[in-house]
Amino acid sequence: MTLVTTPAIVLHSYRYGETSKIVRLLTLDLGLQSVVAKGAMRPKSKFGASLEAHSEGAAHIYVKPDRELNTLGEFEVNQLRRELAGNVERFALAGVLAELVIKFSSSEPHPQLYVYLHSRLNQLCGSTGEQLVVDGILSLWGMIRELGYAPALTECAADGRPVSEGDAPFSVKDGGFLCDDCALGRRLSMVPAADRRFIGHAIEDTLEGIPVFEENTAAAHRRLLSRFIHYHLAEGRELKALDYWEALN
Amino acid sequence: MSAIDDLNAELAKLPGIGRKTATRLTYHLLKQPKPTVERLASTLRTLAEKVHPCQKCGNMSESVLCPFCVDPRRDDTSFCVVEESSDIDAIEKAGEFRGRYHVLGGRLSPLDGIGPEDLAIDALKHRVEQVDATVEVIVATNPSMEGEATATYLSGVLKTTGALVTRIALGLPVGGDLQYADAVTIGQAMAARRKMPE
Image (tube, rainbow over the protein chains, first blue to last red):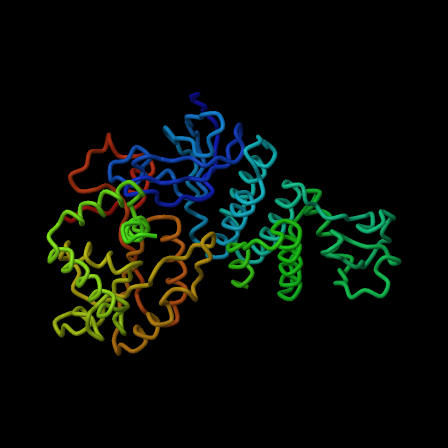
């Protein structure tokens, strides 16, 4: 058994037995980990309030090779992110990010994913109103990129030919924008040029300044995101937090 | 499946009971006199048949309305909102609250797919609106992230009713010791500090 100390973000936790908790962590050095925090529910537990969802700190994990459930020795919290609970949409978005990491990442270390989740949770903490709407959509496209499912943007998702500038058809099934020939005769969502540019910036993480979305535009982005995630990532599996976030709006 | 296996399987579904404890309990029951086991079975049957949520507040009760809802001495202008019926026992033991209760039946939890429509929030709003006086709603959901998000949501929903929405305080336990408290709890206690009475 090896003791590993690594930065970690709490994704989810639930009761295990009378006094313990099982905690899903995204760690910098060990990727996605399930750990048991023994005695975490006791009133005088050393874990205290540190294992709340979305909190971040240094996790001391006793790792045994080939074990699915390791033991959490200690968790020194340095960011609690209580602000996320101050707004229901913010809280739901943080839940969707956590859900995507839990369901679609692995125990392979993925430092870029860790850094991305860290920065998006921090961003969401201070986000409100129209900015929160855009931040949410940005965060989810970025998460899709980090998990390796980015849609095709400039080359046709079906045949690889360049997609012309301006409005373009988006095929969830093919995994991105299509050229005119491939879109011919198909019923597809037509994404206006400005929204296409936004998706491009969101995927490539190059957005400067936050645009303001009309409510119907925001709803269209949410629908597209949800369909894309359900089709490519979930493959029929239930995504409770994503469905909750979509229903909230 | 034998009767022993059946009981093992049923007991193992209970919180905090694994296969080993379930087996131990099953064999303990087998050693008991028959009337003792029959009494337990009868109690469980009665529990399943007679106990149901109170039509007003959602607390578990054997009658249509629970004892807290029918007690005329309790304050109609003060509501304490809790996640589960079992939380009411904890608050009652403190003896500080003399108003009415409201059980939400859970808390917002996106990862578990629990949204506002899964909680008794509309019923709470309806109850508050029916009171013809200024109402205080004390949100006593757990001090977890989900409990806080639920409290935030309730505060927004109840804004239109004109009710005073308050949140139970967070901080150090009475009789506790600062040096054994975790940093987060101390931080919350500092943030929620109050002026000393003169």
